[in-house]
Length: 375
Image (tube, rainbow, N blue to C red):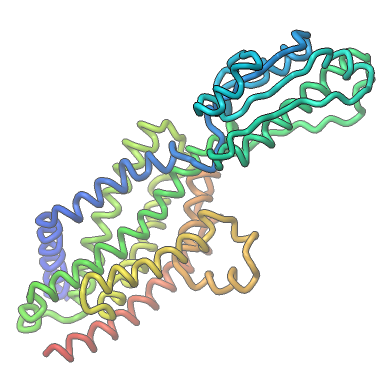
């Protein structure tokens, strides 16, 4: 037993030195856990952020001024007041994504119940902002008009009032959600990439043959790659949470980080085994890259990180229970977002341990078969 642990330890140190001499992999790790997570939190193309809006106010009434003051950051930039001749020129030049025209006598017609119309011009070349922004403008205008008419006419206060309180993310900031979900995705991706690339690199460099003549077993070789590459990913993820998520992005973490990293370690046990299995199937790095694309994308898209599982077909939900990423996303969101403890997430821990053991056994069997063919 002592020799088994000692050999596994020395082989793992060898893997760490090999990774240290691979600048491409080091650059990948540094990028995804810093700029990758920062960009995922800050660059949200589907989110309205500081959209440029101009207003042609021909009414100059309290109601039109109220509507103008309702557009403010972070959804919209401060409105630019323009005249009719400036509207087309500004839209053509791309200075404004939206221009809202308030006609003359707008407030008078609203109070008289005549149903006046506002004109909203949208620069549809900016698709992401145009799609979501037009509905935001409509909601803002309707809300301001409704509140103004209710106050002016002295309408009775409704007997029921809906008060919204957002838990876990009171400001509804997408940076909170985007950074932590991307961290979970990158942990999975790097675990598969590093272990698979380590095995293929040894095959291409001919060092696998050296291992075959050494007094080591396939289980020791696999465990060495699992613990060494898993340790690298865990350390990089810890630094990312500390320096990028909590430091640069100022995203609060609700739950216990040691509990989260314990779950991450179980997930890494499963995903690193998956990476080794894929590396035994692929003959070279390009083939491994192809396998990686068709594996990572479904795992990330269907595990509940990008889209809630409840929105997926029932069959997809059941199939994805066999994926370790599904349970890792569940426990990660529960711990980091909601502050859940072990009493809540123990089913995900148990599922990860079972899936990890199963994947490790399948990968070890495939790895032994591959080594036997090379011997």
